[in-house]
Image (cartoon, rainbow, N blue to C red; front, side, top):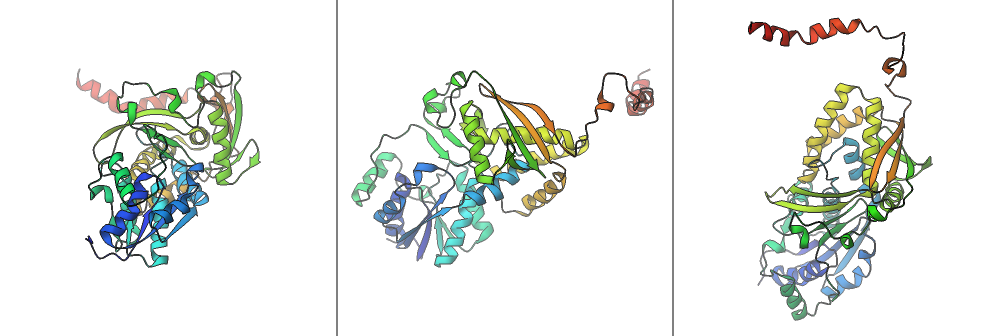
Length: 401
C-alpha cells in the first residue's frame, strides 16, 4: 500500500544493510522509482561495489559523486578558519559532512525531476536534523522520507529478514560493535562498550591512529604554512586542499595524534559518548590557532573566540545554509586577512605541540616584550594606566570606609 504520492526519490546511499533495505522499502511503501546517491568524502574502501549493490537492491541508477574537493574547500576549511570546536573537543567531522551530501542530493533531485529525498538516519541522532535542515534550506518543496521514523524494522535481525524476503543481497560479514562514520577529516566511533562512559576504549577499536605508546620514540617536526587563514603548504611544499589534509592525516596518525574521547550533548537532548580520530585536523587546528596569537591583536582574538563557539553550534546543529553562518564567514574572512605565516609543530606520542611560529604580519615585538634592558618602553607609564584601569575598584572600596 502506497504511503503517498511520490514518483521519484533520491536516497542517500552507503551500501550498508540499512540503506540496502531502504531501497525496496521505498518502492514497496511509496511506489516510487529510487535513485541512489553516494558521496565520496574520502571513506576509502567503503565505496567498492556500490553500483552493483544499489542496482541489485532495486535502484534504477546510482550517482557516486567525488565531493572531496568541495568538502574540504567549502566546508572543512571555513570551519577551521572560524576556529570552531564543539564542546571544547569535537572538530565537527561528521557535522559538516551532512550538508555537503544533502546539497548534492538536492542537485540530483532537480536534475532527475525527483519529488522526494530520503535518508537512513535514526530518530535519535543529529544527522537527521542536518540532512533535513539542508533540504528545507535548498528546496522545501521536496518531500523528505525518513524510514527509521516510519517502518517496523527495529533491529539488524529484522533488517536481514526483510532483505531475505525481498531477495536483497547483503554482505554477511562480521559486524563491528561500533557505529562509525568516516571521511577525509576523521572517523567517529559510537556504541558498543563505549556506551559506558567509565569504560576505556579498546585499542583495537581505533582505525586511523597508532597507539601513542607504540608511536615512534623520536619526535617529528612539521611546518604548516597559511595564507589569509587557510592552510596552503606542508614543509614548504604547496598542496591542494585534499592532498594537504591527507598528508597531515598520515603524519599525525603515525604519531597517535588526534584522539578525542568525549561525552557530548546531542541536539535532540541526549548525551552520547563518542570517540574521534582526527589526526590531520588536530594539527591544522593547533597550528592555525597558534598563528592567530602572533598576528591578531588581543581584542580581535578574544572576540573571534566568541564567534568560534557560535560557529561550532551552527555546524553541529545542521544550520549550515543560514544567513548567520554566511555573515560569520564574512566576518571571519576579514579577521583572518593577516593570518599568513608558518607554524612548526612537534609530534610525539599523541601530542601536537607548537614550537615555532613566524609571520610577515607579526605583532610580536621582541624589543617591547623583552625582560632585558630596552629603550622603547617607559615602565613609569604603567602607574597612570593602573590608576585609571583600577579606578572603579578603588571607588567601590572607598565606600566601605
